[in-house]
Structure formats: C-alpha cells, structure tokens
Image (tube, rainbow, N blue to C red; front, side, top):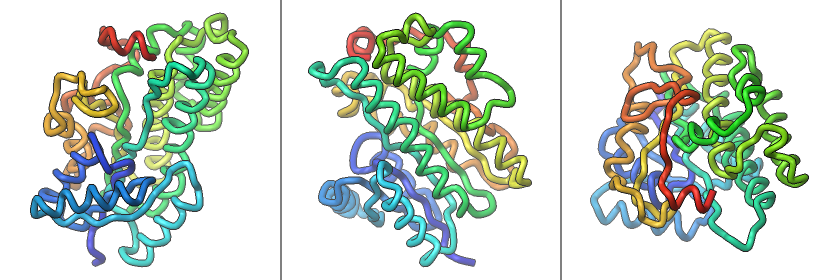
Length: 288
C-alpha cells in the first residue's frame, strides 16, 4: 500500500502552519505544507525542520486551477491518492481603501470559489477513509443571523446543490456592486457570508460522497476559535496550539467513524451554526 499523505493549504503561517506542525508529530505519513508564495512556504518548512519535524513542501495557489492540477498529478504519481485534505487557505481583507463591494468580490472568490475549485480537483483522488476539513468560522453564524428568511431558506434547502450555492454567492457579489445587498436580504459582512458558503459546501460534498457509496470518507467544517494570528492581528484569545485542536479532531477521526459527517464543529462538537447565537468582537464588526 502507498504511503499515506496529507495536504494543508495556505500553511506557511497561522492556523495552517499549526496544523502542519501537529500533523507531523501525529500523522503516519508525509505531510505537505503548501503555500502560494514559495519563498515563505519553504521558510516555514525550514522553521519546522529546526524543531525536528519533517514536513514536505509543494507550491499551491488555489486561485490557479493549473497549480491545483499540478499538485493533484504529483500526488497521484508519488502516492497514488490523498488521505487528508485541509482547506485552510483564505483571506480576511482589512484594507480600508477598498470598497465593501471590492472586499466582497475578493473574499468570496478566495474563501468560497477558490476553495471549491481546490476540492473539486483534489477530492476525486481521496482514498478510502480519507478526511477533509474545511476551515470555516463562527462568523458564518453571525452573518446568517443578518440574512433574510428567504436567503436562509435557500442556503438550508435539504436538496441544495453546488450550482445553486454558487449562484447565491455570485448574487451576493452583484448585489454588493449594485449596493442592493441589504434590500436583497444579504448581510453587510464580506467575510462571514463566504464562510457560510464554505460551510454549506461541506455538507453538499459529504452528501455527494455518500450518494456515490463513499461513506467511509468524512468531510467536515470547523472553527478554530478566536486564535491569535496575523489574520486577527493577534487579538484572538487562543493560541495556535489551542486553535488546531478541532481541525485535528476532524482529520484524525479513526476508520469506521460514521459521525460527524458534513457538519460544522466548534470545540470538537457539531453545532447548529444557523441558529447558534454568537457575539463577535468589536474589532470584527468594524472590519467586516
């Protein structure tokens, strides 16, 4: 049997780097730290090597389909498949020179559409008992509380498919450009709403795998919590080591596990993210 392999996207810093660090000591196989910036990615690998760990590096820009395909082909050639995929790459724009519409378009593209492309290309090579973890956020719960009942109903349809979910994300982009997003029932939240897309995508992908008879593969989303990273300008109350606990739980669920599947987890427990009441920090409200 080929050696097991794990891939973490956007892993040169923050939560992604923390997941790679922990996987290197717990995962029985090779762990690939991937990053868009090769210099930063290799520097992160060298940092972990100085700690006595042995991660591997592969460049990956999830906004470039050819880059994702190159990684897929590399994995097929050298490992015959993929065992763990952590979709961690994402952005949180704090640039006040950008308009709300610009922040929406850029954030939806990366945090939803680019992660969707990464999953679409890499998930077909998942092996038996593979695990996928999409790094979402409880900001999705805050954003959904600001949506109209009609938007919530569309997002939570039991038979919702990826095409319709993507249409909703595109509608949000256009509504932001037209400055009609509030009238159409969307929130004034350029970060939280794309994370809704990532969370809902998780459930759809699990449903699709189950329909294909691949129930042994588990796809879950999770929130690391308010972690002190560059993305939060180090205002989070949790350390990176604390923040990787739930992602690691998702990707180390043992063979034979049937639940959680297609769910959103917080503190290693599935949550009803649609109805979960959460008060986001004041800094988030100002920068969303």
